[in-house]
Amino acid sequence: MALAQINIAEVHNKLVEAIREFFANCGAKRAAIGFSGGIDSAVVGALAVEALGKENVHALMMPSEFSTLHSIQDAVDLAENLGIGYHIVEIAAIYKQFMEELAPVFGPNNKWNVAEENLQARIRGTLLMAYANKFGALVLNTSNKSELCMGYGTLYGDLAGAVMVIADLYKTEVYQLAAHINRKGIVIPLSTITKAPSAELRVGQKDSDSLPDYAILDELLYKLRELGMSYDEVLAQGADKEALDRVCALLKGSAFKAHQVPPLFNVSGLPVAYKEKWLL
Image (cartoon, rainbow, N blue to C red):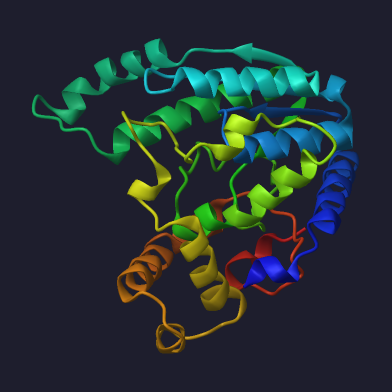
């Protein structure tokens, strides 16, 4: 499994240096990050502060009607632990206005689906880019490799940014990195690490609604992508057929997104077909 092959302290140092070098090459100093209260944005925020200094990192928290109070508090606690500036920009009213304008298009019998979820992500992406443009910052993307492989992200929304910091790390590895960041004291709130992952784009949403458990997902992805094993080979090793079928279908259905994402930092050193064009 991939986790056994990665030295998490080395990965941490690589990512800090990669951020620092990327910004130097771009002639930029300031970073903007969307803080959701989740593990991914927390890890990216901590890495950015170490690479650029707390005075050069700014967070936007953009809660909607579906955001939980504990997630908002986790995001605020993280920003304060890091000592960075932040703003809370509510998106509920913006989202409502969009839906009112789209009502004639969606029709009187409109039923909630992924369009409403993606709209929220795109509003957040727009606000982040507006901040970045106004203050000469670069947006750091916070998507991980598990999500990217599965297409669990919104083009022109939470897949936007100047660079994808942790997109070569599986979700389970992101948790390891969070533990490493907290090795000398609490930087990332413990509740961020222990709570069930959720995009919070609808009531009660959890990542597990759309994806297999990350421990299962990451092992399957590693075998299929990094090791280049076939479907039959993975199945012969005892993989759950239903989970494997689901992962393969999502890989195929979301492949087009990989052609439209920002560049990402290569920390695994492993050749992976979907990312080769975008490695830094």
